[in-house]
Amino acid sequence: MGRSPCCDENGLKKGPWTPEEDQKLVDHIQKHGHGSWRALPKLAGLNRCGKSCRLRWTNYLKPDIKRGKFSQEEEQTILHLHSILGNKWSAIATHLPGRTDNEIKNFWNTHLKKRLIQMGFDPMTHQPRTDLFSTLPYLLALASITDFMDHHQSFDEHSLRLQLEAVQLAKIQQLNYLLQSTTISTTTTTTTTNNNNNNNSLLSNIISSSINTNNNSYDQNNNSITDIEAFNLLNSITNNNVKENNPVTTFSHDEIIVDSSSQPLHQSSNMLLPHLLDPQPQVSLTSSQSSLNSTKLDQGITTTNNNNNDLEVMGSEGDYHMISPWNITTSLSSSSSLSSSPASSSVPLNASSSNTSSYGGTSSYWPELFYGNPIMHDELY
DNA sequence: AATATTTTCAACCGCAAGCTT
DNA sequence: GAAGCTTGCGGTTGAAAATAT
Image (cartoon, rainbow, N blue to C red; front, side):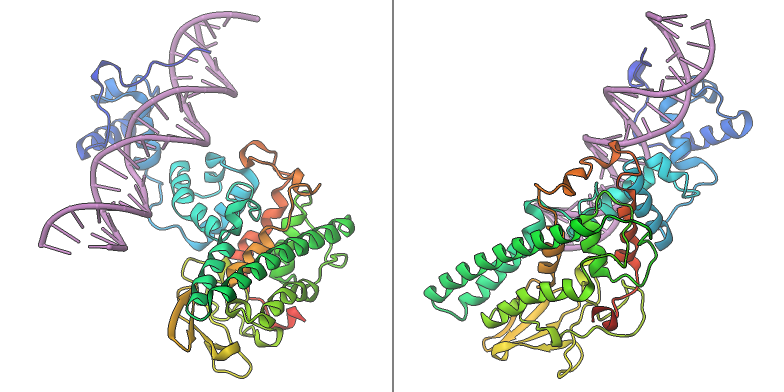
């Protein structure tokens, strides 16, 4: 294959286009069409290479180009298509009238990708991350706890706590393994897609999606990890922390109330997994005993929503800012596939290089995570 | 208000597919 | 079938804008 000469030869202009250049290009194309891009600059009186002219036209000057913020529907479309197609920006762009591949690519790299990473998901595979970084929120939370404890404990107590935390991490690993092996052993039939199925709880979806990487769907009836089972498993860990007076994870089973109002997830003020949402979700925890936005904890510690996805913990020494414990739940769900697992081994390493069917179905949970309905209290029990 | 840092996005670059000769 | 050419694609860059200090 031959290669076209690079356009930086012969002192052709590069860089931003001036309004005059734009006008020349538009005038020429409106009169004559673009024809051969290579020949166009000379005909249009532009000191640019054809490649630059084509790019300017297709990405900026074409009359049907839509500019401005991406709508929520467009975001959903991009997320879904990216989970199926990978970085096939031009293919994605064909489903978004008026949007260019370049614009979508930029939007992905500057907004959506970051958001997925923040949520603990691999932006390429759309799977919960299993590497070191996926546990970062948990480690940060631990660091925060440790810092907190420094204000309340002696060095010996501090050391003991670190050991207990290490045990907790081991328990979490074990839980992940149990969740995984149980689900893999029973999810052999796939009949119903979980896409747009509001009856599936988010928790089950996350866990199942993270495990069933090779299935486009799972049978709800045969799903071995029910909401309550999963929730109880997760909760057993947090309850252990209650016993250990861990202020970060002292939300006991009956203290978690999920608002029964039906709002889009990103607007809900009471939700189970706020860390899965928009960068500034409205987060609050409620207690059956306490008022909205406040949860009473052990040792007279109260957490309060500060509208910043964090919890402010008020203890005897005053306000204390710490990382949301809900990020721990991210780690739980995200690390549910061990490297040795047969299921996880089927996950494509690079989305752009895989075919669509092998993992496209797992994408169906994305719109739910971003925009889905809130988890209802009834769904948990 | 000034400066530093971060974010955004238009444009560039190299590669490869597909068409023509 | 091989070589040359054109076009389109996706990764990357860097200047401008926005935000933080």
